[in-house]
Amino acid sequence: MISKIDSAMIESYMGNHIYNAKVLESVFKRLQENESQNNQKINIVHIGDSHIQGDLMTNKIRKILQQKFGNAGRGFVFPYQLAKTNGSYNERFSSNRTWESYRNIYPVKNRPVGLSGIGLWRDTGGFAVQMNIKDPAYKFNSIHIITPQNQNMFDLAISSQTNIIESTERKVITHKIKKGEAISVIADKYNISVIDIKKANGLKSNNIRAGRVLKIPTNETKPKQIKNSEFVPLTLVNDTFSHYYKSEKALDKIYLIPNKEVSDYELNGLVLEKDTSGITYSGIGVNGAKFSDYNKYPLFFEQLKSLHPDLLIFSLGTNESYDNMEASSYIKQLREFIENIRKQHIDAPIIVMTPPPSLHRGRKPNVYVRDYAERINSVAEKDDFAVWDLYDEFGGISGIRKLKADGLIGPDYVHYSKKGYEKQGNLFTEAFLKAYDNFKFKK
Image (tube, rainbow, N blue to C red; front, side):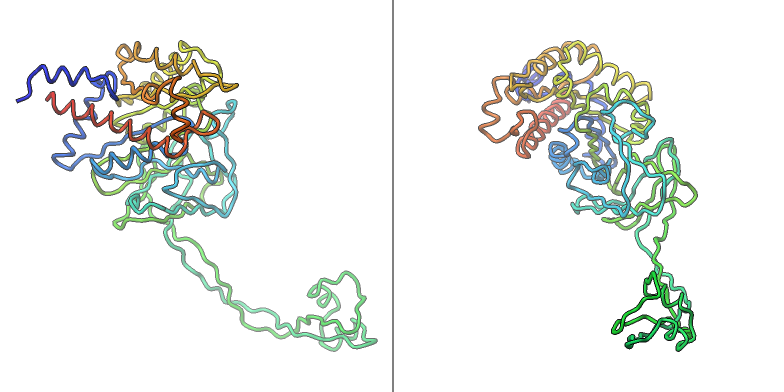
């Protein structure tokens, strides 16, 4: 039998842990219920900067948690390729047309910058966006389309049909020009006009030379078949947050096509889910982003509701440090970010990850991220959020040299290697599962 002293020892564990984990009880209860009854979808949403956009750390967390609690789907995805930037390797997007894009890191403009932090739009149709799932684990049964104010701008298709149109065309023969032969003589021979011959051969004048072969459009006709392939739109359903399609069969490919009744097309992202219980883990990141960049666009917070988050995780602060932002200003922006979320009646618990160690301009120790990490715990309990101290787990200022020696940090000493991001994911998941086990143990 485990004594109360043992319980206290676990609570005071000072290794890799989540501070103020008591705020996570609501999500822990759902995870525990799903473990016993296999009847819950738990939606985790991880918001950040370039460390998150690339989906290396988040993909590692996603895989581990879904292996333990079940895979309910990929969650939020965005066609980063169409915005000409990097994204997840789990899915790939392509289009036959180019798209305009705008990111929340730029000055505010009237652009559809919402849930993805990147606005993507076109003002003409004629496009088909193909999405291919690369990881078979993320085949999906339902796909939700997120647009500004949930406007019905797109249709979906999984196949196309070929229409054959019967018509006729003029029969074309050839004529080799003889020496001294004029174009008018040739036209008279075939009972057609000089203009017909010039048009068929791209001639600008009546001058022709012997030996050339001319195309002669005769007055005879021949049957012609025109094949026209078009996508077959699926039947979509809409709710408050999205237009969506549900399939009995798991899909690994789909096409996003224009709704022909509209003329402007603005896409904020897609949500992919499976017909199973477990976890969806959505990553939302923008290269160079800060809390203040997300705070500029109310549409982001309005659309966040479409993901029905049960847990929110924030990974921002590195770019604030490059603006020489003091810890007090960083915390002010964090609080504004949380306030904007709460205004939308999103009551999910929050984990704030401190920024990882990095070097500042001129490769000096980044004391700003150190200050953020030192200050954040002092406001966590008051503001009712949890903290995971990635800065400390990766060795702080003194750990940079070892991170480099171990191949974990990149040559810019700001971004990390694939190995480095995956280690961050492993460490966070370890801390999260320890907190979850502690919750179950106390009960």
